[in-house]
Image (tube, rainbow, N blue to C red; front, side):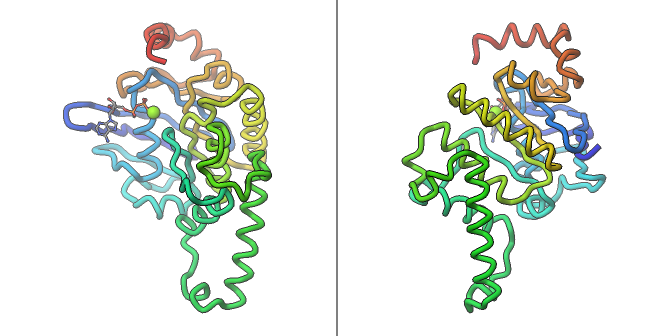
Length: 254
Ligand code: ADP
Ligand code: MG
């Protein structure tokens, strides 16, 4: 398994957000993470990216334990993410947002940049070109010079995806990436995610849009009250009695 959760637990006060969650994510697949609101999906993603340390359990990336590493170390191993509550620099342009992400997470050497050495200038040119390519893949290259705060909701989500892609991740964590998008945007994201997987990226996807999840994911894990209900192929998961029950209960919440 490329990413392996081994009995991951995490509580906040009296709330068991995650209780002994175990499942594996195969390399170069899209793995869905579904469950009602409050079932622990975002917390699990926070554990992967290092924002939240687990109370117990292990998390292995390519066989290597990463659950004690700090977020920038995990990012350096090729883990990038988007946030359910979009996190952008609103007064910076789209291009600047993507480049800032590369600098914050990429751990570029400061010395050549401080002294404006040719190597730093070449690197800057490269990061601008890379940022533009990622904006284009996300379908918002025309907005490169627009302020992030001027974007539509769907465009903001696409900017977050572009910023994550610019880090050239091995695994991309997407927390409700198409929430609030229009149908055409959703179709574009579907094409984009498929092409990322074809180019070797692994995707862990949290999403409430069931048809989207069912079409796109090779495997799906269902969480309920912080526990793993099941992990399986979309058709297996859709027929699972506890999933049907959880989702009938979920309709009113979403
Ligand atoms: P989901 O993403 O599936 O909606 P979350 O992972 O956001 O669920 O939340 C799981 C549970 O953990 C919820 O009960 C939530 O209130 C709680 N929780 C998550 N993060 C925190 C936190 N930082 N402090 C306190 N409680 C939290
Ligand atoms: Mg969430």
